[in-house]
Image (tube, rainbow, N blue to C red; front, side):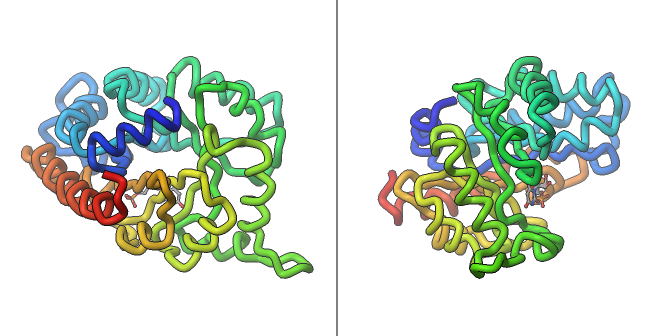
Length: 273
Ligand SMILES: O=C(O)c1cc(=O)[nH]c(=O)n1[C@@H]1O[C@H](COP(=O)(O)O)[C@@H](O)[C@H]1O
């Protein structure tokens, strides 16, 4: 999907919500466990319930890989089921020597046909460029993450006082344009979102951390906004497990609508719609 189409979709859905499909066998409702493919049945119901209120879906690959071949099958069925006007992100956090990255790219962009894949930048340029060779696809680089461990490396400073995540932003933005590259910035780091926005004004951010991790949507919008919205805000557990009973899909829908309505207010305030 092009950047232009993504922005159009944000305007028409009045939402910049990404629903995270972190589909956990231990948390999906019991009545689905007797079906042929419980993970897919769950995802299908969630997608049907949320598709009018979000612009993107982000399956986290860990929840599928751990189930072996059956998990991959559920993932493939899920990606094929998501409507084509939705932006799809394989949250795989890959990145390896160039020769290997080529095959990661092939997996997520050819076999699975995702629009984007999340990448850990630690191994440098050749770990990212094989993904960028797919001109209609996106790379989402981890910049400033939402977790506690973000403090271990990302804030380290070099001799000039520059933080590691700032360095990552400056370097990687030379490798890919804002038409093909985005950054992960955690909603739990509102003070950092502004500094990321200052370094890469035009790029989209994938912002996880609202809902279960306690990040603020309003702070995210305040610090991360750009002229095109520039934000995809993810919520996984906060939507998926709003109820663990038979009403899980309608409760997930209520949660998605709640977030979408807050986003609509922001989009109107900022004058995008
Ligand atoms: O790359 C990510 O999506 C990601 C980066 C980050 O900094 N923090 C983070 O939580 N995530 C992912 O975003 C999702 C957050 O899920 P919830 O906390 O349940 O909304 C999970 O799939 C995480 O792996």
